[in-house]
Length: 403
Image (cartoon, rainbow, N blue to C red; front, side, top):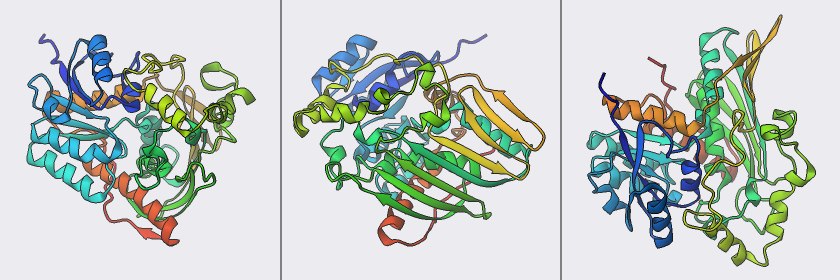
């Protein structure tokens, strides 16, 4: 039997996104068919740390890395404003591309990324998203099977301390969109909703909230979506850290850690402990690859499925929700839990890209058109909040049926 081909990945950007993607086990460094061969970053210390850990070649520019014959796929983890530029450069060099979410900061850039991939005969995937958690995939499969009838309503609610985790200067500048909750975290929540509803959103009416003038970016939102078939969906996200959804989704907390007042107030206390804003920026910088606070492993180790808030799908003859071990089905006469094997969403993402690359076929899900449609939903929510009206969507695509 022929040995499986090894897909060689070059990482564009060694910031916080790369730290998360590289964390072992189950990250980019552990996939059996993947080898990290290169990385590009402007910071010498990041390049040195990456080279020492992975024995890979490093570059001071993304374009130079993309020209390397030792790279098959470029994983774009640079700041949001650079996703399009770097994805296009990679495609122009004949590389397959995994772009971090959000796909880009304009619909024009999304389309340019798609066109570049098509023009150069490569595949583009939008990834690094918890919507690829196997528990969500199992919910999608159950909905599609019609086991408990057609879906009648989707609701997703998330409360976290996301806004009060240490931020960089750009992330707290409302003009850059780097710190927008709607684009960065809302992208995942709306992606999950689109997957469960089949993809074809018709419209959105939403509002955003800025409740802390010291952190002047959208820190909460509420939105009502309608699919083309009339299916309603609601999404709420509050990142101000006063309440934690884990109190609802886990009985005793993430991976068995009790949810206590000390845990819930952790982010607020950390921010309050900085002498000034510059100290916060410095702390965040130190968590990037090459920094003294950059983590290299999942801590604590992943033992349960990752929740992105509480998502419930109501159907004609029952309802669904994710559990720490799989999916709970609430039927008319009985309840049952479907156990789902634990896998990190990064593993699933790499599986999808590997099959596309190794077999010279389209990516099975989350391609450029899908990513553009989810990005459109995020921008439509922001536009609706500004203009206080319903926004009709124009670029939606159906979620692919597995072959």
